[in-house]
Image 1 (cartoon, rainbow, N blue to C red):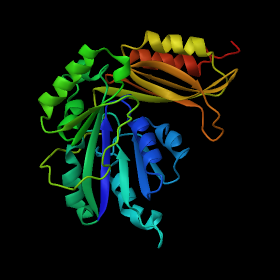
Image 2 (tube, helix red, strand yellow):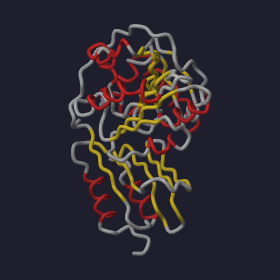
Image 3 (cartoon, rainbow, N blue to C red):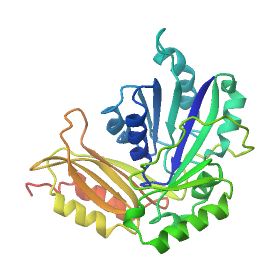
Length: 307
């Protein structure tokens, strides 16, 4: 049986950071990383593949929704043969679910497809952010479901919030899942058994519909250099509407990686030459006006560095 570690957590909580930490801690193990993104742009897969070769990216929705579940199951079926060698069989699979995923269908999904004869669901980890979790847990059901299904909850980014916010977040987590282990982290730096002992959790759920009315998404591709100050100003102005924005942005001074979530907006230089410049944006509601206005401005060249 191949053990699975499933990583969940809302947009911007730190799931990809956790996967980077996992790659570093378990570099000597034959692990396959399956990265799922709601956006059609593969940003997280590109970030992780810089440190790990055995990465499978599934962008464009949730692996637990009706649209992508068949593709997801196909990848799971291929992994043992595709990534194993006679000298190095696959030791485990680490799955990063999209930020809006409800993982409560996972046990049923493995059982219904017979994949529970191949894989054992060893560990479910949820990453929560004190900036977004207390605000959204009561209005977005999947955030609560992620914690409810978890064996371990990482309360991440504790360096960015005061003690009262962290305590309030932990109290909410304990109210949802009293039996989960909780670890407070900075940059998801936590040492825990990646593949715990598989056990029946008794969690049940339904496959999600393809279009969740709580979210809207888009991917913006860049064709020329962007005025970074103008872009970041527009993003901050739409912060109440946009849950997450991330991607590689070309500027007059070179490529940068931009990441915006409830914890703030960061920009850092990138030396990557193998990525396509673009910005993945996830916003609230079925039709986010601020998100589409931002997309219009970019595509119309209004944020061009040469304008």
